[in-house]
Amino acid sequence: MAKVRFLPSGYETDVRVGTALVDVCDEHPEAEVPFSCRSASCGTCRVRVREGMEFLSPPADDELDVLSVFGDGPDVRLCCQLKVRGEGRIVLEVVEP
Ligand code: FES
Picture 1: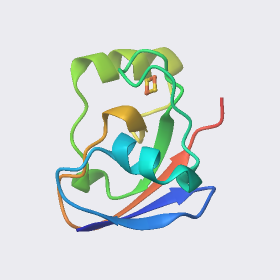
Picture 2 (picture 1 turned 60 degrees about the horizontal axis):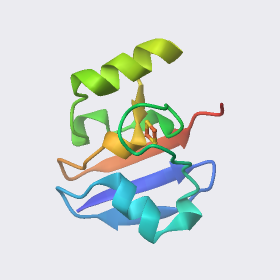
Picture 3 (picture 1 turned 180 degrees about the vertical axis):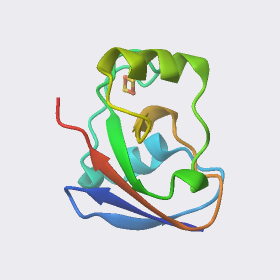
Picture 4 (picture 1 turned 120 degrees about the horizontal axis):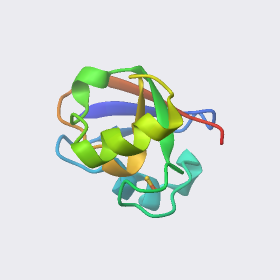
């Protein structure tokens, strides 16, 4: 299990390794991460990884393409593309549009 905390909502939950975070957010709307396309095209779900990047799946090319448009830096990811891949603490902060 990984411990995932969402900011600014403060919602925290245990997530099994291999789980997609979009599924966690669907089950727990109190995480308050906004989604739209869910397929790495719109950038609505951008989150800043405050802790635990090493416990997340690495970005694929389509995610990197979208992130380059916003120019947020390497700590920002698309929540709709993230899977937990290791046990540890992960802190994600929603990037305001
Ligand atoms: S919801 Fe559109 S990029 Fe994640």
